[in-house]
Image (cartoon, rainbow, N blue to C red):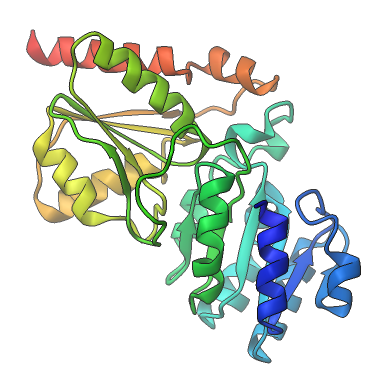
Length: 303
């Protein structure tokens, strides 16, 4: 079942749900005639989108807001922080083409600081599905949650068969290992799976952790990975500052846990626009490149 089909069924079951967009209908193009007045398009006006959603939430509605991720979190940040965050309203924010998924678009359209900005708002949940299967699985919980939630929309094909049901705040442990733990989220799980396969072919023991929600993060899973392996690698299509690497380091310091952490992220740069696979190759985010980072880090640690 697709995201759109799942959202339609949830709307049928709960008349409090209102689907909203800032002229970004790609994922929900068939819903307007089915939802009638419960579908609202404010046009290219993300601040208006959030202000209206907050008003609806105050009236007992559950707004699901859709917009391009970069404009949603940047242009409307103050509205999200003030109207939704301070009031702690159950508004759901769905950011389209986040991270590398904006592939051919330049820096103005690249949402690679979104996790950092959204997690900085008190009580805001951040959910990063790896694919459409996970997105669909997460949607009922996201809507049922009373907390505001930011979702990195991802409708990619599933790279693995997910082994555990989705739960906000719980990571998915796809494999156990003692040499390295790869922590990732979103569609880059696809490349992490490739890296795991290559590393295991070389005799390395790899733990692969799908961090489904960077906030709230699964503290137990992160600390167990840190204590049970020689190396932690965080892998994300996000700026180095404020994303998964920062979250993991903060958690390790807070818990007093010592671990070697190697980040694979965008450090002080935007990425070169291109087709998605070309972006991954150019920026060094393929499974092959990730496996090389892990091998080199382990070699340095043992020398």
